Image (cartoon, rainbow, N blue to C red; front, side, top):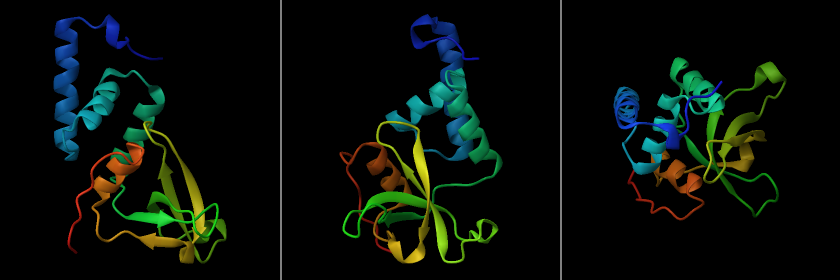
Length: 148
């Protein structure tokens, strides 16, 4: 079941949802950027059960997308931006593999790939937050280089 749509919100209810979204973002230490705010407003509104379930899982596991990588999946010279979510995949019978989540642009969705370690490059000059922003924006967001 989903909540009301944006067009159905009255001022008082929208204000309550906005305050709830800002509180949740602050609690999780999510920067209040327009894209983040839009996502957390939809989460607080209950507009998408899939979005709510995904964020609830991430919050409950206290997991973050904090290891940005480039991963070669389709061909040796084609790279996708992703995030390592599991360093070990022994439970799947994969000894030299890592789990890499590759987000889709302009959506809170993506794909999970099990990839051999030698096809993954850790990104060291860009923060994970900037890498996610870059990936979600389809590559149009500005990225600040960080010295490690």
